[in-house]
Length: 447
Image (tube, rainbow, N blue to C red; front, side):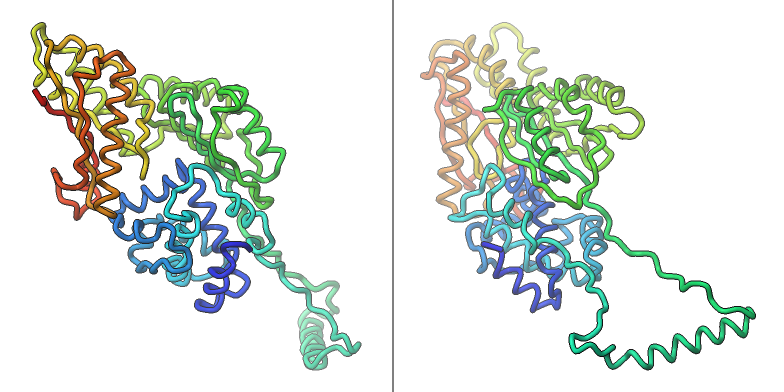
């Protein structure tokens, strides 16, 4: 079981899960790895749930990460996910919630050694999901004892069967022809999943399929469409997964995914399309996929409030820059730029491809400013985590934005970058919405 061995043992003994502890950890790992951006995406999900301080304390702590409360688990995992876990494992939802309160922090800690958030599926995760420890044991067959006897319940059992047969004969006037057996109860199959996000031509991928052939087919398709070096992440193989009925047409569908900022989520027999793309592009892709996949696969918009907020902010920024009248000043430009939102990945200073496009358009405007104008790019964070680390990260993000503008032709002397960490909040850090507002790039006229 590798790095998860201790956790599985703890869940088995503390919550009476026995052999179901391993499969529970496996279901949690699948849920985490299937998030957009994988582990980093799950950590962002925890932060947006208002638990940023908690998740920061989990990173790199492994077996020592402190547990959550039941309500906190329900903030992070949708009710449908908890019920699905309970159904698959044959356990009460309350038991699942209590066990996950311990498992989630420790799994995050184990997946982030040294406090570093991985950008692809860790080998330890894939190895565990492929091990016997991640599967439910088969139901044992009732057999005779090794001594050759029929066991202590054999004689009473025969008596009961005899009485039942006699009762049936008296009621019907004939002996029974056969004994009806209860239908076998099987656990619901794992739904095949595939999550894609296009970040400036680099495709991040995660998901789960039933066999190695399906996994290879998906990765080969994406590499053919985007180039082998532009496909990041991996896909888990789970033999209990249902067939992916969208797989046969994925190669044709992949041509639709070449727009930077696009996100696609294949989940069972449904596909959702969205991300940082225009509504017209989204609707065109949805129509194309409906034609490709036919009536057996539903295709709909992907609901992502963060992506929608970033996209709307970008549209406002571009519109404001385009509306500037001749003779505009540095103050006019920063007013337009401050309408934008750059949603950096957790712990990252990489400027998303969608925002790079907006910055390239902004560069053309900045180059027209009067000589001597200097614009400061300020990096800001929320108050989650270590203040010194936040200060460093905010500086790196400000410098990354400056670099995009310089590469787009802006004179370096017109731009400065400064990180402020969490020292200048514009909203309360007590809510997810407030922290989201505080994690920002702010522009000002330095001179």
